[in-house]
Image 1 (cartoon, rainbow, N blue to C red):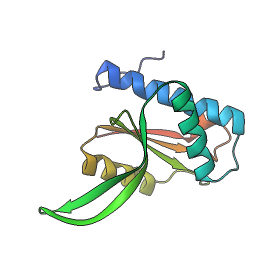
Image 2: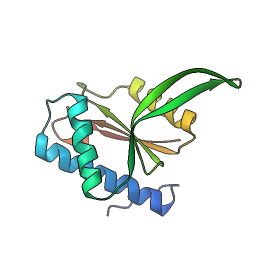
Image 3: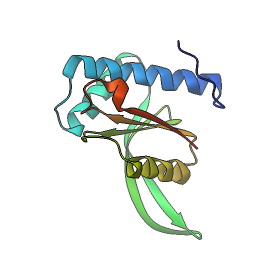
Image 4: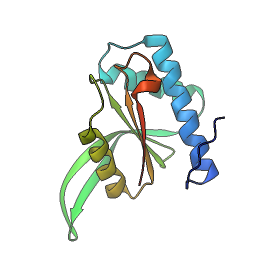
Amino acid sequence: MLRIPTSLPDGLEALVHTTIGCALEVHRELGPGFLERIYQEALCAELTARSIRFDREWPVTVMYRGHAVGGHRLDLVVERRLIVEIKTVDRLDRVHVTQLLSYLAATKLRVGLLMNFRAETLKQGIRRVVR
């Protein structure tokens, strides 16, 4: 495993690495060009095959000064420790990173992955975001 200096605990770092491996396998098999939902289903199948727990369409309540002001559903939350946001866009933009940072703050989780399955190689389409 490629070791990148990080402030994340080893177990969480390993989960990030394994989840990326699952996504790479999906992209190798399917390639770019499908809708987000297709990649989400395939990634769920890959995580299940590796006995990795996940929640799909995980509801998050957005709070403001103690009041619930809205909600959102996250694509995937792996092991209740890692957010995975799946995209099929021409390129990931700053707004996608900002969105993921907001999700991390709302859930109080530390790390998330943006995965753009439209990229020619998924390695080019993955952004890791740590709060």
